[in-house]
Length: 284
Image (tube, rainbow, N blue to C red; front, top):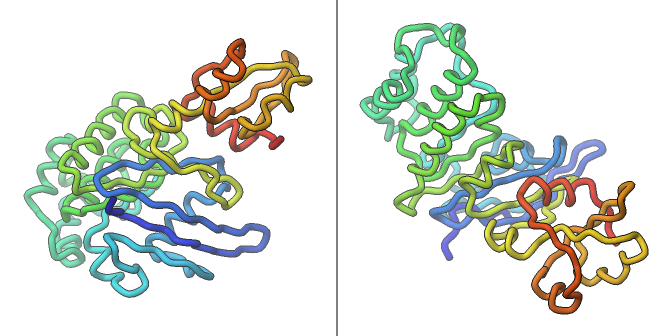
């Protein structure tokens, strides 16, 4: 399978924190990139984009090394961060000349179409825009040079459900031809449940799980048991948590577990419950 992004042993050291990650984003798909605050999501994204200097490792985008073909690669990437990076005292119309000077494939008509679709005023200063309007403008800007890859850092954070749904529909439309791909970091796991094809979980600077979302959801579950039964399920346990009612274990291969222990109670797991168990659970 061809990859849109391949991150190989990417390492970045800070005082008190070390990032060491590897994962692949298959072409034509959406990958949700999730983890708790401080896990290393934004650092990884900045490293993929070449915005920070890494200690070692390699990033390949469209099969080319970022370190060798950065200018050509960045022409094909649209980027959206959770904070609008466009100057508050300019208007959406002001950016037409700016974007045309940055991207050789900038499409003025497409940009204006997105402005109209999003009902964004072309000649009002960005400083009066709501957070939702600023995010829509950032997305219009990212899409207007016809990128093949979108890299998004918390693009729906703080937006109301209606605006979020509208933006998620845009992302789904973007990948319909199977030649476009999205890497999206988000704390809103319900959004990823709707649109993600793959999930990559990062914890404390390390990738703890990266696979097809359907495979993860089908394979994993939350098993409830007493503390005395913990060791019985050790071969299937990924992590566990104890509470006043007993233990919850995030298990893998739940069909195999049920075959061996048919009386076990296993609840379905979703993206949020898996992230919580991976981030806050203990290892057996």
